[in-house]
Amino acid sequence: MSLNIVPFVSVDNMMKLVLHLGPERVMTEIAAYIEADFKRWESFDKTPRVASHSDVGVIELMPTSDGEMYGFKYVNGHPKNTKEGLQTVTAFGLLAEVDTGYPILLTEMTILTALRTAAMSALAAKHLAPKGATTMAMIGNGAQAEFQALAFKAICGVSHVRLYDLDPTATAKCSRNLAGSGLQVTSCKSAEEAMEGAGIITTCTADKQLATILTDNMVGSGVHINAVGGDCPGKTELHKDILLRSQIFVEYPPQTRIEGEIQQLDPDHPVTELWQVMTGAATGRSDPRQITLFDSVGFAIEDFSALRYIHDQLETLPYSEPLDMIADPDDPRDLYGMLLRAQAKAA
Ligand SMILES: NC(=O)c1ccc[n+]([C@@H]2O[C@H](COP(=O)([O-])OP(=O)(O)OC[C@H]3O[C@@H](n4cnc5c(N)ncnc54)[C@H](O)[C@@H]3O)[C@@H](O)[C@H]2O)c1
Image (cartoon, rainbow, N blue to C red; front, side, top):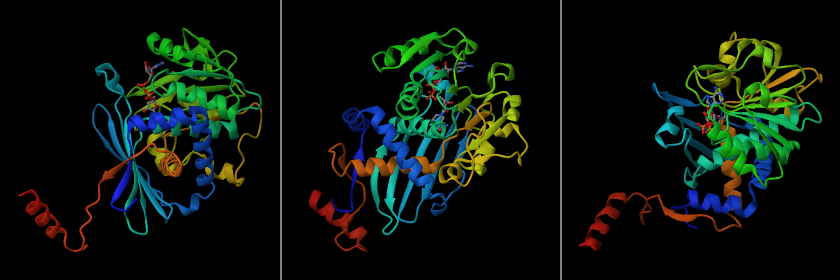
């Protein structure tokens, strides 16, 4: 394909690609791409994402580069959207070649964000969760939920998920979608009930406030908490006292201190960077009784890894269409002449 034609992955093609390979395989492979990129953390440009806040939500740009490729994602977060028939989170993203600055992939990323978020959560849990944890509580059963459940099944060996959502129709939807997945699924009437016997607790709710999905007395020792829904200033899920009892693991501290659960703590509260756990430079879980907490907010390198993964899949799979996105004048400096020739042709 010539450089002015950019492969575009529509929602339809993303669904075909994911269904062709299978969602569990895709998330396992994306997790491997993320782990490979986290292990070369120092080769990336890093910046907290650029967030534009309003009273009802946030719109964010998430850029990074490894010197060879550059990627960014556009993503929103609007908890009130579902009441209007719209999704809380939608996204698209782009991968470009650093050498020319030309884009090499444009893709939907609403589905891809769900896949990469779940892949990242399960990857963190692979390093942090207590050994032999096969039951996961899932609080918040919206758009992300099934992806989380399947990633934990494929990557961490979770076999039983216990669901709870404020809205029982969300739990019913999630339970229905997971039927036939091989997971044992239990629908629960409270967060406390969902947490019974769970070695892993995933919170994946959407509310634009400092919410308290988990209070301190609900969380016993020896569990791993995967906190996904607290990802914006003023938008958290865990009571501060849980944080004070936990060993906290983060993606990129300068961003997580603004957006994560740890916005509730002192700015110098100790946290461990996950990339260091992956390289062996830092310790993950050090005691079976410890509470480990992945304070997930979503970092640009994870999207870069997901974009790189999709780009590599397109070498052998047909799930893209050519997009006439970059102007291509015969003489690169004669951009205006190209316009005039098009006008003459149309006349
Ligand atoms: N960390 C990351 O990388 C990352 C990535 C994507 C999305 N997110 C965040 O994850 C969250 C979930 O995203 P989604 O697309 O599934 O949202 P969604 O709106 O589709 O689902 C959220 C669910 O949470 C439920 N909920 C709200 N308050 C609750 C409460 N107090 N107790 C129990 N359930 C409650 C809602 O009823 C809804 O079913 C959002 O906050 C989103 O911003 C984080």
